[in-house]
Length: 304
Image (cartoon, rainbow, N blue to C red; front, top):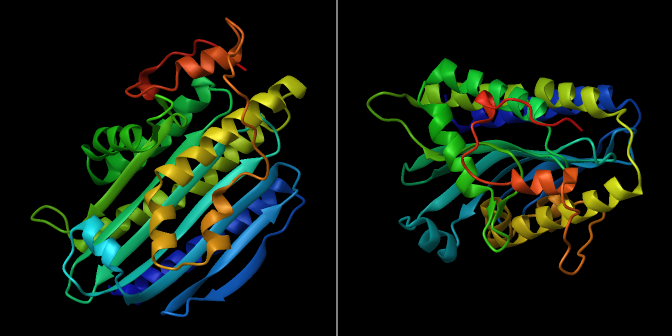
C-alpha cells in the first residue's frame, strides 16, 4: 500500500458519497471544480446547492504536496521535509432546521523523511437535538470503532468532545462524534489496519446521513425554527474560522480558498445576546451542548 492507493480510494469515496446524496436529495446535482495548486497537487471540489433537502453541501477531494511551510513545521513540531496530504472533506447544510448539519474528514499525511499518519473524524450538529437521532448516530460510529479496537470509540469520542468545543461560547458545536489524528503504526497496529479503519469510517457516512435525512426531511417548521437555525449556523462559522485545524492547514498551505471555505453555511445570523425562551426546545438543545454525554446509553428525554 502506498500513497497512490490511498489517493485512489479517497477519490472513489468522493464518488460514492456524491451518488448517494444526489439520490436522497432528488433534485440538485453536484457541480465539480477541478483545481491545481501551483506549489504541487490539486483536487476536485464538488458542491450541491438549492436542493430539495440540502441548501448547500460540499464533498471535496484533494491531494497536495510540496515544501512544508515553516509555520506548519513549528505548529506540528516536525523536522523540515516536503509534505504530501490527501483526503476527503465534507460539510452539509440542510434546508430544514429539523435536519442536522454533518461534517466528515478522512485524511492521510506523509513527509519525505518517512513520517506519516492518518487522521479524520465525523460529527453531527443538530439545530435541535433529538436523543433518538443522537443515539443512532453514535451507535453507528461505535460499531465501526469496535470492529477495529474496543478502545477506539471511548477514546475518539472524548477527543471529539474536546475538539469540537467552542471555548468562547462554553458549548460543544453539536453532539460530537469521533475525532482522531496522527494515527501511525505501532506494535499493535499496522499501517494497513489503520487504513482499513479510515475506510470504514468513510464508508459509514453515506448510509448514516441518508437515514437521518429521510427521517427528518418532512418534519414541519416555522419562521421561529428557521431563525434558530441561523443562530446555530453562526456558531458553526465561529468554530470553523477560529478553531478548525483543517481550515488553518488549508489556508496556511495556500490551498484553494473556495474549497476550504465551502464549509460555511449559505446564511447565518448573529443576534446580540440571544436568549431562548425558558423551557423551549431551543433552551433544551443548549443544555445538551456539553461534553461527556453518553449518547449510546441515553434515553430519549424529548422529541422534536
